[in-house]
Length: 512
Ligand code: NAD
Image (tube, rainbow, N blue to C red; front, side, top):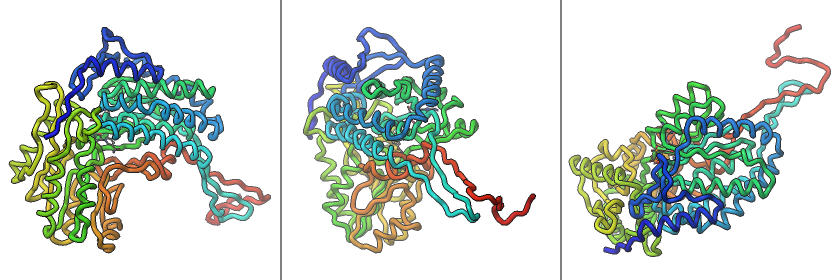
């Protein structure tokens, strides 16, 4: 099987420093010390050490963001849009640099890394348009001579906590929208992807300087879970937008609720696709393999469960196994590679253990799960995507293992497929492959998929920014990105204006 040779860590360190420099960020020196070990999954080698933000730095970042908010909120929204417009231009200019950093730190293949930067550019465009469309409603008042309206005001400081697998797109979803909404941002990126964060922070600072906007609208705090905890506990942070595992959300949500803060939670998924007997199988295989093996199975929307009608199961599974087996695994910088590395050894351990559990539950491994490039890079973790046929939806299938494992289940009746599909704790993304309109519509209907995203004849991953993104149940219920997700970043004020000389009370109440 294809495996591309790997670059060495020294070459990657030089590439990281050059990319950072071009983005206007000071690269860490090789001898620098710090608690944050910056590794590349491409070789598993260490690139740099960076300092974690201590309690004082976190406090000062929130203080600056909080102070800047008082002027930022009164800057007209279309003017705030100018900052985001400039950021978008700089992202276009540095698309290649940021994509290099994403590949270096998250291990994404080139085209997906470029796609992630494109997503940032797209959300900037969206947010610039939004800066003139933060609409409120006008409602008919029940009282004569009264006007009833609502308007949306900036909320405050938004704390963004992000995951390693979309190191910068998720930040852009939050930050571009939060900034036009009049909020300021403090970002705690994943401890596994600090360099992309340093580069984005520098680009945003440049955008602020170029447009004469206050630099304090954005603050970066590097660090691990402890840094995140300190940020989310700060009562001056009005909204915590946290992306990561269900475990993280379970910890963050009650802490923020205890101080009556707001949360947007974007947590784990366990995404399923139903394949009906009428499906176009060639099209389905392409959608399924991209969703299951793309980003080496490390997307929140990765397809993890395939629910196939028993009449087409054998044929479809053969096609998928054939396609997965031939996927080029290796250096994510190489043009031909489609599957890059897992983020670290822990992810590989989790995958191996899940496959063992699945086997113990009666599952049959049809392909994949083999390590690759162990001699060339003993510290990196490359693996071939696994396909496992399961007799039933056991506990391991109901859990999200953040690695490329596709479990295959079969169904007989459509009702059975829907029950199986929804019978997991998470509710992020879902899809159905069918040419039967009744099935497609039923899947999208109230008693169909219970996920925040439900697709027909495409896979579960690769959402566009125009729609609201997020999921139900243990996925946390948050929505980000397009549609009206911006409302979570603002506070609503309902206004009643009496322009008459009378004072009628609502509901016909009589008083004075
Ligand atoms: P993770 O939960 O380990 O970490 C995510 C972020 O949360 C990191 O910045 C981390 O430092 C921080 N964090 C962890 N515990 C915290 C705590 N108690 N308080 C404050 N901050 C804390 O997740 P990961 O391994 O980086 O990312 C993979 C997970 O993220 C998967 O479960 C994936 O499905 C999920 N994810 C979800 C979405 C979505 O939009 N729903 C998008 C991307 C990733």
